[in-house]
Length: 381
Image: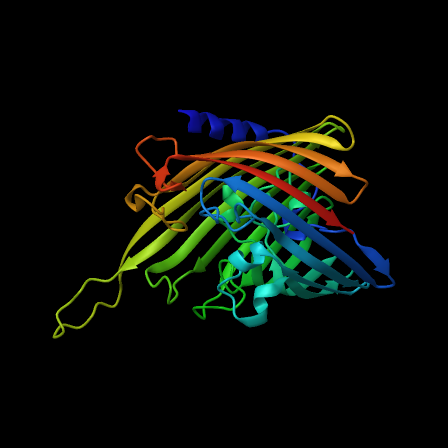
């Protein structure tokens, strides 16, 4: 019942007008301009306390426990003229180690690396290629740009980056459409020689609201996941700002993964020319709100639910047959120092919604919930 209430709250939120910065194009640092080049940097340091051991399970962002650690240290180099742009973002930290572990060599340390040309100056049509920021969900890896310090379950289980080409064109003054031809679901180096397609529709409602609708379709079969076939995914999110006091965001998404299971035939019989397919689905909803007491002090909150009962992305460490179904709620106190430093203290509770499902490690056993406290400091220029 409570999850139906959460979903209804999300849909009501979407009827409001929506906000500001597209997460696929977030201006992460602002930077210092030197002619046609802009240089910026950002360092995000954190410490977590929980009973889950040395690593927070199922997460890639700020996932180390009981130690001081660097989540993300990045250098942002941008070049821009009227018809050409380029961006290089080398990065290091526990986020890069966990989230890009499957990428080869030095690609593990590239958050973004892209070049673009304006193929129509009159209509403002851009073609970009390389390692691109992902438009999916309402969050990015850069903590200072987010309502909460920690990333939501939705962002942790969808692409943070893409590799390929992106074509962007305006449909109206406040509506832009993007189409992506990419290597696949969060992969720099293609792992199955089949390309994927993505779309993005961005609707800017005034200066303070943004609605974004994205889709994805691609074949995800690989050596690591030979049973995977076509994946379908769509998400819609709203980011909004109300005056000087309130910020809010809502994200809803759903996906379907097709699995192929070939029948086993006798060696004397020819194999079939097609497989037997079945579909497994997953979905998410999250709601985030921030209230600013002053220009420098604010309090954030989030409630969310992520349902992956077929273990497409996550397999529970204990009771895997129950599937990965979990949610969280939390609060974050934010204190801005000057204009380019942010101190944050966050409490977060993960829960499964059932006393019969235990997926979170705690001391020497498992339980259906996990409490965590995070302290973080982010500085940028």
